[in-house]
Image (cartoon, rainbow, N blue to C red; front, side, top):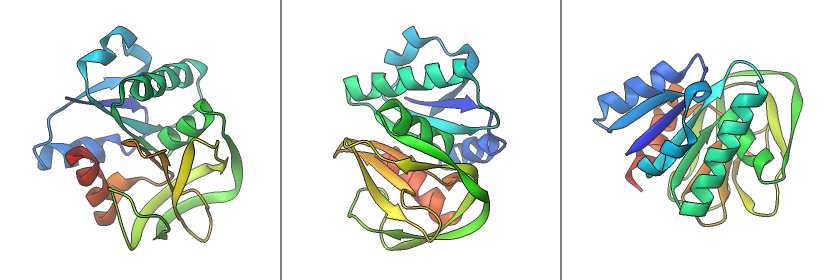
Length: 180
């Protein structure tokens, strides 16, 4: 069963609507009320974006990430979800010089199981992953960001700096992730 961890993104409804449309079974829980002892009830996770930085949300998402790594669960971190994935594992993020918002062309640099070729996706963020820890690999980049899609080694743990729930190519990524 898939758990969507809702961190307060304005785009979470588009994500859950897409999952419903594709008949992908999931539960959604708000990160603030997520019981960490319930994580073993799920085999895959999507961490949504967020609106504001809150220490409690960061801690819950980091614990969810560590749970996924320990148990080899699938994980897709979206925007903030990718950023907290990088931070949890020793990477860094930085404030961008300007808000990144709109359609962006992403170039896939490394073969992977969720996307290929060049894709068009929706960006909406003012922070970005600036340094990856050695355990994360960059799979894709754009003219504005070198770490648009990241992966934890060869495991089914991914992060997207963009919002895949907001574009056709991005929806393909979500669907491929769910079918892994």
